[in-house]
Every structure is written in structure tokens, then in C-alpha cells.
Image (tube, rainbow, N blue to C red; front, side):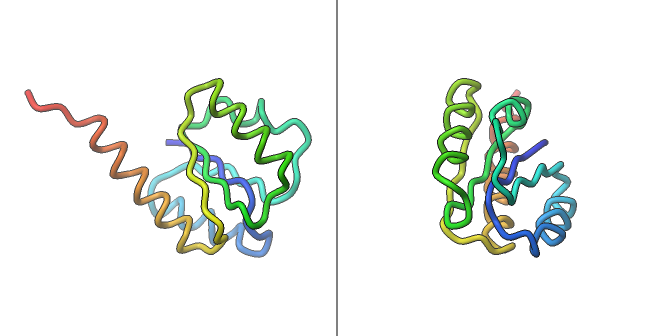
Length: 103
């Protein structure tokens, strides 16, 4: 599973990556403002936006790309590692329920 993290703090990028690795998730981190971020998000399974550390323009581009490609988006105001951990745990639960079928 590949998740895009938009926003957050530069100094926590290493910790974000470690948390994602612990969960078995490939994480693309965009802590700095990106020009034309949309194409970089087209192939991810979900997007996490940490809204207190992201520009309105980047958030708007991410939401537009997500809507056009059917990508789920999780938005949180906090930018801590615990917030990312909660999002990843939620995604794992959703992913397991979606893939589980009773035969």
C-alpha cells in the first residue's frame, strides 16, 4: 500500500517514514510546498493531509487529484507522528475489511 503524506514538519519526516515502515506502508512525504503536486499523487492508495502545515493551494490540488482518481483522503489538523499512526491504523482496518470476503 502506498500512502501520500502532505504537510507535516520537515524535522519529523524521518519519524513519519519509520512509522509507515512499521506498518508495512510505502510512504511518499511532501512536507514542503510542491509545484504541480497532482501528478505525483495519481498512483497512491490514500492521501493524508496534515492541514495545519500545508498551503491552501497544495490542499486544493491534492483534493482535486483525489476526487478525479477515487483516492480516499484523511485530513487532520495535528501534524504529529501519533496522528499519522492513527491514520495508518485506520487505513489498515479499512483495507482488511475491504479485502475480506466470507466464502
